[in-house]
View 1 (tube, rainbow, N blue to C red):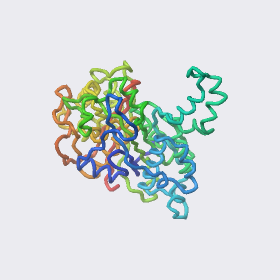
View 2: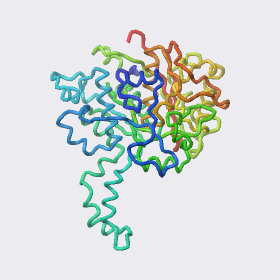
View 3: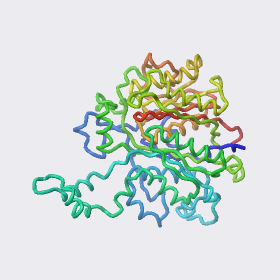
View 4: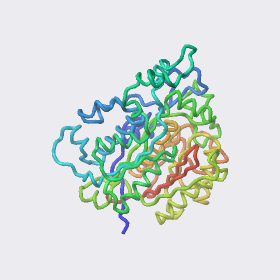
Length: 444
């Protein structure tokens, strides 16, 4: 018999705050984390704004004995490790990391052999300064790259563990090592759909009895010259608001001109309901449905949103819910006009006439596109809406695009009783779509 799966912990690291409380407060207050890029000089780029995490001190998130390993953590890995600590602490888990980091002593409350991980990751950018120095020593007398000099001299300028900073599976690797999670572990690299797919896989793993607890979600930093250039070449970015960064990302807005690169992540603790109840855990919500699909053309969004709608239909069927039971849609809403229209039409197709009345949460105006981490942040925000009976307004959605026939919450937060949430996600490039359904557990 399939086991029930619940959410017992949230770990968030975003440009508007670290931890669920800080992120929720910022969303309700309408604070924005998008600003002119400071981590490198963006002057030569068309788009010069991004969602930046202000501070992240890794010693706060790992045991003292593990701090030396932070030297081989790229930014994406740092975000995931921080999210994992915050999620485990929020869930009241006593993993090896929590016991050693907080010097609390005592026994753990989760069996490591029944503790799994599924983490979404993106394409991690190499340290360009470090790589440039190595490439310089591999040039011949005319300044051309010489593969023989690279093998003899260039590679010697890189630390032997250099590659371990940039493999996408290293997010899950560090998280599982530091928390001693020995059950099934996997890495999902499907762009912005990664978090949803990772959470969906963790849901299935626990439901079929493969684990009791899973840490799942995603993290990514696109805030680097290569990440910015890649998105710029694909014509996805806002380029006319460099002097007004806080207004740059405009989900479902008539003046939406593109998205904004960002960094951030979210990890959730999913747990077998009986396991959670046995240890007296707080229960945020129950995962009740998961669906995934592929779009017909990976190069551009379906004009009618067919791929996204299929994933949502599957998730709702899996959950056994109808359109009449959906109280909130936590949308992706990236600010790119064609993508927003595709998603809005998909929501309309799934909800029918109720699309005029079901509120839509869209939070990327506050922080930009967090890549593989974006879906988990959306989900955490939706779960917090359940907890607080309040839906934050979408920042910068001032004039709803007439081609987006949905009820995006705008202007000010809206009070609402949210029992069932539908949340879709899709990869901007690649054609992957996913959706999840969450339900409030009364008394949890």
